[in-house]
Length: 227
Ligand SMILES: [Zn+2]
Image (tube, rainbow, N blue to C red; front, side):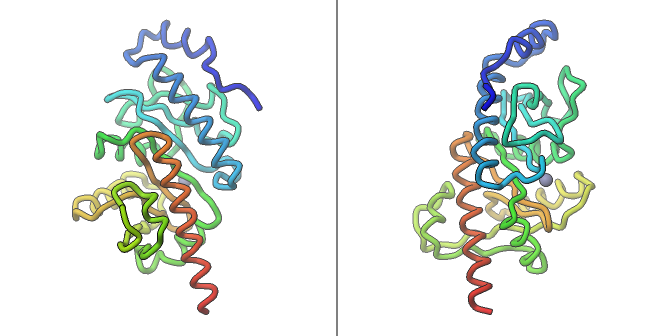
């Protein structure tokens, strides 16, 4: 396994570019993102270079995975800096096409510091199965307590399913409409595509994605067994 320790190149880069974010914070974000990638990749959540991960560096910057890289084997060069408009900062690297979905969450929720997006088989099948309803209702599961703010199984959580599109502003608008309607949002599915979820730190974001993966898997099993 390759080291994800920050390399001299990151520090040189920041020094020469004279940018405003902390190189130490960037290095810490890069380490946490790579570690999350190894864990989620090993669980089969990031097939074929899909998925993307990010962390907030500060109020104006985020670290995000470069498009097209193997998310299970990320190195420093696979993580780049963007501003909160999704524009690359002092790099010619291209971030994920879905960068605006990350910055939307950082702008909307100041307490969020990590965003994870994966494309597992369970997430993809669930998104297709529930696309017509536009929502997956998760109810009476003990593991709902893994989602922040839930202290009992005796509750429900609605995970919206938005239509897939390559038009990111359109997708951003759909997410925004859900938030504007005052509906709680801890994560969302995109039809035929995957899931987005987040947390106050990477530990919480990983717990959320693992919980959603498990709960969506339960819903699929229940459908199968009842049919
Ligand atoms: Zn995606």
